[in-house]
Image (cartoon, rainbow, N blue to C red; front, side):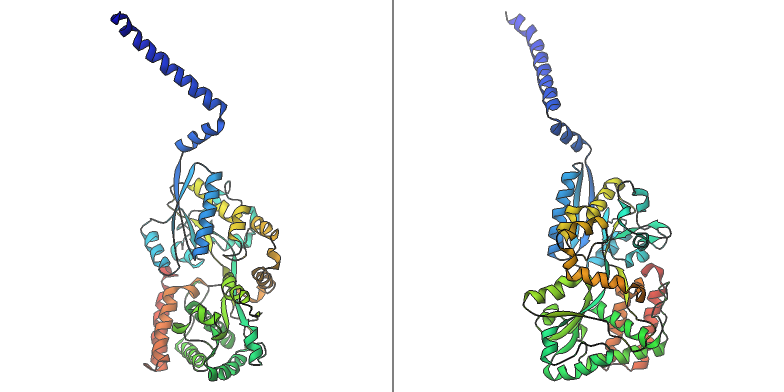
Length: 435
């Protein structure tokens, strides 16, 4: 009897296994979703996404990625993100070590810096089956094109804008400033009350000085190839004007400027990117303050405006991406997907993508402060030039600021200071690797 049982057991096990397999096959055939999930898991790919920004940007970007993963179940996305401070230095290490993320938020200036020959980022033209390039004009795509290769696509366009606290203008009985002289007249008055006319960040202050110089000297500060175009006398003129701005309380010293000092009324206005409108305009409006946008200060009769436009930020794919197709799908989602557009709104600026704009128009985009400012920018496009990447080069701006401090704080004469600054900037600007 025992012998018969031993002989039967193997057949029973085989039969049981066969029954289990039949049940599993029947279950999968009746539930195609399960079948897809298993297939997706078998084909899982991993890519990295990097960006910088505030907490709001971190939250909606991660929410967007979750939506993307729901629509692309075979793609897993990991993150690299942080505030701007220190981010550029980390990115430099990633790029130099070929450890950059697959999909990257980049500054416009980084195309020249990391891809002078067009090979520093993946050519997105090769991924047009996955990225809907028809949402962009040829001009918009040209901003990210280097040596015939599409290195990046703009998320939004940007230019500088001036916002003034209208309540403070009325309190001092000031007219809206139109010229640089108007600013100095205002500065002499508010100085008596310990206030400033304007407050702005280091980069904005540098571009502010660029605008004045180009208007007053009818000369570009940087050539189109990024080289420095100023002689020592030109730099002296800028330094003297810089000190005058500080001495007359037209602009708050860079090291003293904080966003909260502007929001609390220690300065009447600010110069910022259109993409930062929510911070410098909407935040004050929410406090019940009347805020107005004011035109750029101009030298009467100037032939050059000295004001520039640029892509706000851009999406690119790393040249060493592990999965170009998955990366392209993510870029297309971030730029063109209506659900992503509604998550992002105008936090990065008014989107360039036609499909993103159309999605937001359904939510009242056309009435927003940013949209109105961008439309007016487009109307005056002919008066502005595309920004030279070296105008945003952190090393150049730091070299100017640290050098200028020697003169501003009476540690060095203007001639010696100008000579040192010109030499330092010319060296940095001529180094193509740092352009």
